[in-house]
Structures are given as C-alpha cells and as structure tokens.
Amino acid sequence: MSDQQDLNAQRDQLSAAKRALLEKRLRGERVMPDSRPLHVAQNLSSATGPADLRAEVTLDAAIYPADRSVRAGLPGQILLTGATGFLGAFLLRELLEQTTAMIFCLVRCRDLEQGRARIEQVLQSYGLQHLDWRDRVMPLPGDLAQPLLGLSEQQFGELAQRVEAIYHCGAMVNNVAPYATLKPSNVDGTHEVLRLACQTTAKPLHLISTLSVFPRSQTLLAEDDTPELEVGVTNGYTESKWVAEQLALAARSRGLPVTVYRPGSIAGDSQTGALSPKEFMFSMIKGCIQLGAIPDLPVLVDMTPIDYVSKVIVYLSLQPASRDKVFHPVNPELCTMGELGDMLRSYGYTLATVPYAEWRARLLAAVAQSDTNALFPFVSLFLPAEIAEQLSRPRSLTIDCRNTTAALSGTSIVYPPLDAELLKKYIDYLVRTDFLTPPDDARVA
Ligand SMILES: NC(=O)c1ccc[n+]([C@@H]2O[C@H](COP(=O)([O-])OP(=O)(O)OC[C@H]3O[C@@H](n4cnc5c(N)ncnc54)[C@H](OP(=O)(O)O)[C@@H]3O)[C@@H](O)[C@H]2O)c1
Image (tube, rainbow, N blue to C red; front, side, top):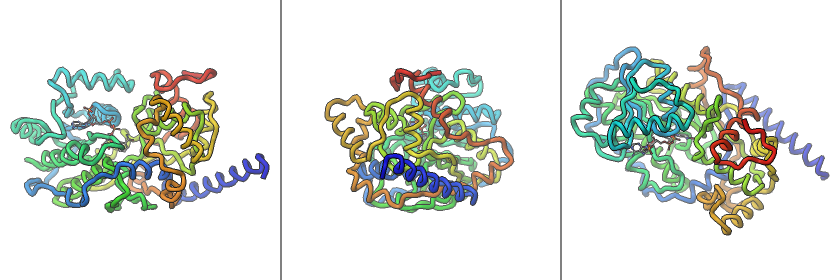
C-alpha cells in the first residue's frame, strides 16, 4: 500500500469512527476516549490497595441526619473544600457568581491571614484575580486528613449550625501514590465531611467524584450506575475515590441529600487557556514534544474545559431536582491522538507519529539519560505494547450523560468545541508560564 493509500485508509477509518460517534451522540449518548492503554497502565503500576476495599466503606453509625428537612431556596452559607486547587478555584468563582452566599473554605493553613493569601495566590495563578471575593469568603484553617477536619469540637459544631450546603472537592489527586497515602485525605476526609453534613441539620452534600471510579472493563458508564469494585486493575487514587463515593452513597441511603458529579479529564479555561499543568494530559503533551514523537494510540482524548465543568456543577447544584442524582459533566467533543498531533504540529512543533512500541522505546531511552522529560515520573505507567494492547480492549467506551444533558437543556450553558483554536489557548498558556518551550515559529498570544 502506498503512503497515500495508507493515509486514505486511515482517513476512511477515522471518518467511520466519527460517524459512529455522531450516531451515538444523536441517540443522546456521549462517547468517550478509550484511553486504556495509558490509564490501565497507570492503574496496574500502583495497585497497592487493601485486599478488601469494601470493608473500607464503613460509615460511623453516628453519621445519620437527625433532621432530614432541607431548607428551601438558595443556601446562604456554604462550605467548600479544595478551594486552593484547580477545580476548587473555579467552583469558588461560580459560587461567587451564581449565589450570594458566604463561603467558608477549608484550607490547609496556619491562620486566617495565610488562608487568605493561599486563596489569593490560587485565584491569581488561574487568572481569576479580578474576582471580588474578600467580603464573601472566609478561610477556615483545617485539614481533611484530621478528625473533625482539623477543627476544634466547638468550631465543628458552629460550622454544622451555620452552613446550608457543602461542596466537597478537596482530595489528594495523585495517580502514583498508594491507597494508604491517599486514604487520610480522600477517604477519612470525606467521612468527616459527611459527619458535618449530618450534624444538627441535614446539609445537601455536593461530592466531586471522578469517572475513574468505574471499572476499566465497563464499556457503558451510566450516570445512574453504582460503580462496582474492580479488584486488581486499579490504583490508589481510584480506590480512594471509589471508597469516598461509596461512603457518600451510604449516607444518602440514610437520608442525607447527596449529589455526585463525576468529571472526566479536566483541561483549561476556554476563555483564557488557564489550566493546571499537573494534569497528566499536559505532561503527555510536553513529553511528546520533548521526544519529537507522539504514539499512534487508538485513543480519543477527553479535555473538558474547567469553566464548563465548574459552571455546570454549580448550576446543577442549585436546582432542587438535582438532589440525590449523579451527573457526568463531561466533554462531548473528543479528538483523536492523531488530531492532537496535527494541532501541535500546526502550532509549530515538530512531531512524528510513530507506533506505540517505538514511542515507548524512545521514552525509555530518554529517561535512561536524564530526568528532564515531563513523563519521567510516569514512565512506569507505559506498559510494553503487547500488554497495553491486551488490556486496552474493548476499544470504545460510552459515557451516559443523560441526566446532565436533560438538566442543562434550555440553559445557556453549552460546551465549547475542542478544536485547534481552543488547543492553541491551552498551549499559549503553557508557553507563557514556561511549562513548554515555544517552537521556533509558534504564534504565541
Ligand atoms: N482534575 C481533574 O481532571 C479531575 C477529574 C475528575 C475528578 N477530579 C476531582 O476534582 C477534585 C479537585 O481536583 P483538582 O484537579 O482540582 O486537584 P488539585 O488541584 O490537586 O486540588 C486539590 C485540593 O484539595 C486540597 N486538599 C488535598 N488534601 C487536603 C487535606 N488533607 N486537607 C485539606 N485540603 C486538602 C488541596 O489543598 P492544598 O492546596 O493544601 O494541597 C487542594 O485545594 C478532586 O476531588 C478530584 O478527585 C479532578
């Protein structure tokens, strides 16, 4: 087959795949990347969790909403965890904009002043410094990993009296740490948040979970499905988020109003390009640029803009009909690795598309020389081609977003298409912040 015929065949395959995606979308389904060659690799490499994770789902019998009546109307006082993180900062913006509430933020800090400084710093780092937040945001020095969230009994009791809704976004997000390391913040922290939610009055809990709680073998991820535990093929982060979600669902079955949001892979702000370079996808982009090569993996890339995710979560959280539902605020527009490579090339980077096995060999050679490749910390995640190939089946994955789509219909919240223009904003941001070296002929904004 000539190169041109080969290219045409690939284009035909791609357009057939896109037609299938379109048909699924027309049926109201969202089709997601099969990023398993990467993510299964991540999972296997650090599966160090306890033998029986189900036993970890133990909710203190005292965590029981004594008074189940929930105040009607918008909450006047809110607790937000994780405000010094990426999603938390954008949730804070949306809470400031979509409500008039006073927002208490649990922050790891010495005192109020340092708490304010940390919030200011994170808002600045994501281009949100223009927000008028000082009169409505109260940092609470605390720690998810401590009993009673690191608050005194009196502070905990007062907080339980005051807040009318809780947004629990804080968690240690780390795909290589073992379960034992993540448990205090992610599992025990959720447990204490549930204790607070049930104390005095039942306070609606908005839990930020993740699509990773689903078993890798599952091909349809339904919003209304309760993810089964998958033994063996998982990682500490996924395990801790699975246990945390199960704890919240256990509290829901005791009568606490719980709404769960499971984002996929979160990218930058669709207006400014501001993003968290900690996201694995950006290390992947940087690592590929450094190698001068991108693997020809048959995966679709999910990059949901942070402004979309946060706006959707806060909007849904304020609708009474969202109570006890699960939502997938996920990107309906996906791109293939090939398209991602094309976009990076059109930005000016020199990038060959090579078979995964060859790409992996290049990566291993690079990290054997030095630790400067952005994928250095993740190298163990890239399994040999034959194993990744085996584990990556089946190749397609459908994410059901019916609850989200139905709840957003008639609103002005629409998903911005993932195209070269949006990707350029992200790459411009990464270049401006020195995460990426600009290509010689890049057109950086
Ligand atoms: N980013 C994604 O693509 C994605 C996808 C799906 C789901 N999620 C979920 O979204 C949430 C936020 O993720 P992110 O990407 O924004 O992560 P992030 O930037 O790392 O932020 C994590 C936040 O949690 C806080 N935190 C961690 N441990 C804590 C503790 N012991 N006590 C108090 N606060 C603690 C961090 O505080 P410090 O600043 O003090 O560290 C930070 O504010 C997580 O629940 C994550 O599972 C994220």
